[in-house]
Image (cartoon, rainbow, N blue to C red; front, side, top):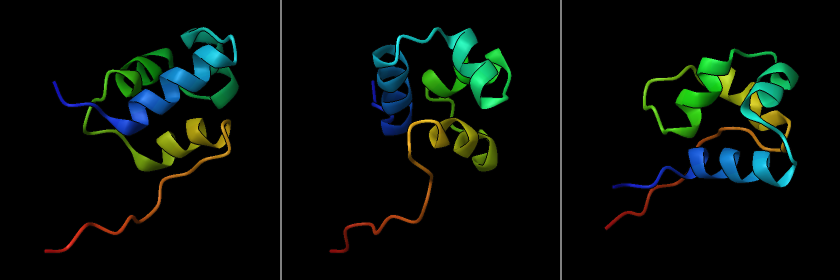
Length: 69
């Protein structure tokens, strides 16, 4: 199974902060289902909503250079 770096980061940071998914959802102003989908690595989520969650951990989505051959 492929890993999803965003899902892994959110899950790890949430657990390290001692937060449940319900608590994280409330703090980020998003729904519980969104947090569950995010942590499960669902591919089609809104980037603005992902950034609401990442903001709590001092992160945000942005362009990343891909390796070129």
